[in-house]
Length: 374
Image: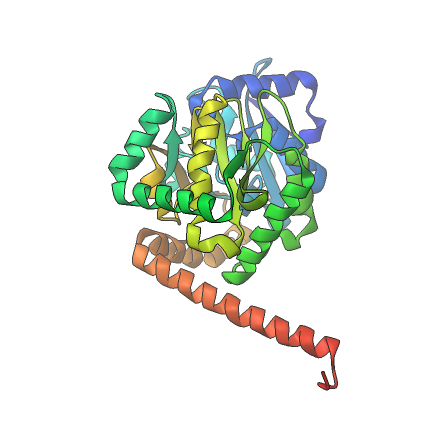
């Protein structure tokens, strides 16, 4: 086999077509984060993006998109932004993972959302996790029956809040795949507020991430699209989501809502309506991503599996990386495994967010009136 490393933007039309062909041939690869369009967009914005093109004879048998950071540290494409990564390859392709790293000039490759069971990386998987999905293969009504079975009480409560929101603030209207950049900005502002309110890092404070989302929002093709949805009560937007889709799968990415309507649980109301719209548009699945939120357990009607793990070649850089990452990974796994710990950690972060916001407001007030005279 021959492995050539280039930037995704350097892929020719034939290579991009082969990428799409390989992706469509394997159901486990039906995820927009594995699409060539996402790799090319990332390459436009980040200098460290690469793709290994794997050939057997004169035939391309696989692609591995990745990030190459200082000291040969390899990370999945999109890193913390994405919920799926791996080899886009012919089924059952197995190559020497360390030889692949050597060709990519990597000392280590750390993964946490890899398509589980890929033969090249399976020996290096340390943990495999379920990622809940809404499966519409048998139709929306069948999915809804599963949701009712999962938790009839939750479904009843959400439907009650949905009707109450419509009565008190105006008839509900759901918009699927909005092209309006103003609607996207409304959603991103809500999400930034959520990050700050809950003590998380505001991803949209990094301009390149906002630019990436703008690029993805502009994508419109049968194989890959950015999908912006918004729920309105009357003429007022109350909850939305931006995600990416292939021809058959929508992946959850950035959901958010207006906190003024929090008592109506607008996020869950939106998800229910998004599921119906996704099924009506011909999609077969909404991938909600692994871990974190309890609502996923009762909205799911199936699961996919993603793996955590690490491949390395002997080197001082790999050893230092292992010492720095292993305690964090273990702690995260312990927290994600125990709902009570996850809720406690969430409360701590929200408390930190409130303190940080209060301090920022005090700082802003002093900046506006340094004398304190009002």
